[in-house]
Amino acid sequence: MYPDAASFIAAERAAWRPYEALAGLSDKQLSRPLEGAHGWSGRDLMAHFVFWHERKVAIARELAVAETSASSARDEAEWNARGDSMNDEARVRWARLPMAEVRERFQTVFEELRGVLAEVPQSRWATTPEYSTLFPDETIDHYPMHAGDLAAVLAAAG
Image 1 (cartoon, rainbow, N blue to C red):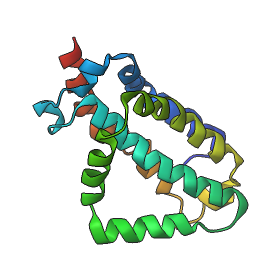
Image 2: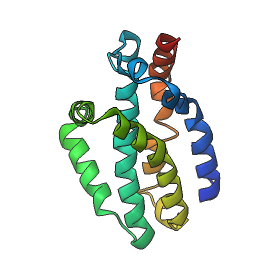
Image 3: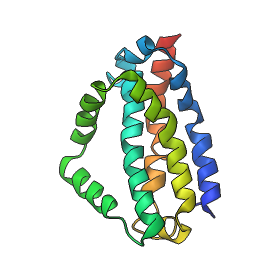
Image 4: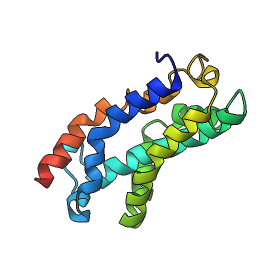
């Protein structure tokens, strides 16, 4: 648990820093599926994080003005019903986007989430049981799950 939003945001930013290297790769380097990354490409990894972070931005926006988040309830229900198929479908949808859009959203969503979280009263997301793990689960606790994917993408890029 973090004592305040600023502490969480600083920890999240530090945990995210290694993934920022993806932005420096060429389109070709980002497009190659890799066995060491579960068949994902760097682009897929970027899209995966952005897909989930955009959903968390929506939740944070709701929590900035209300005690609860309808988006959070919908996300949880959808995940419980569909699970990893959500990731698979998102990967397919993101593969159709122009690389410039993927890069733009990758560059902006993380700062957007941090900015919106700074506006949410801490009692709504850091100490409420329903939301206390929501943001760490999709950020600080999620990033290490993809450290091997990131290493494979960076190694393949040289």
